Image 1 (cartoon, rainbow, N blue to C red):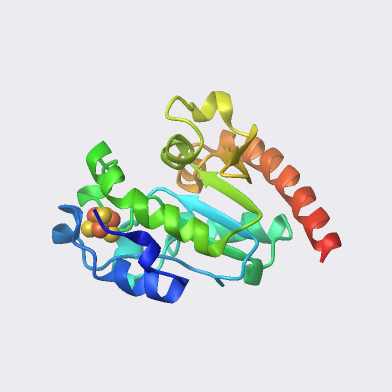
Image 2: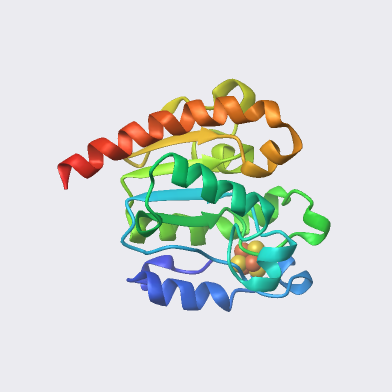
Length: 193
Ligand code: SF4
């Protein structure tokens, strides 16, 4: 088991994460995909894992779901420079299948240390996997989205993954309801600055 505390800043953590081969997913992907956005961000979004475009380009949320996410962030007045985006799993599962529990377990120390070093004020889980990983293994996204919790003292909320909205446009309304609350939370944060 790697000692994550040896990484005292996000740059050294990211460099080590890029070289990770701790689970079999690394053999089937092009590259490790870690983050988008400034480490100083106060809002941290956590998705599921890289898709084909992300695997090719080396950044999370750059495909169709990422474009939709960018529109949601703009509508919610969350500035790009204050949002850090990552995934639970850093390597693309073959065929975009869901990561297996042992793969999620192998990758979790990276995410946990990332959260410690970014130290955001707000965590937003995009989709069930992130919610089940950071909020509760029993989380059901249809039932539990929009409910606020704490993750190691940090406010955290889950909503649908943007890819789900691409499959079912009826989910746009609940996601927007969730992001309106996130927008108001962020406005309060901005008022503190
Ligand atoms: S998915 Fe995570 S644990 Fe597995 S090889 Fe990639 S970075 Fe390492």
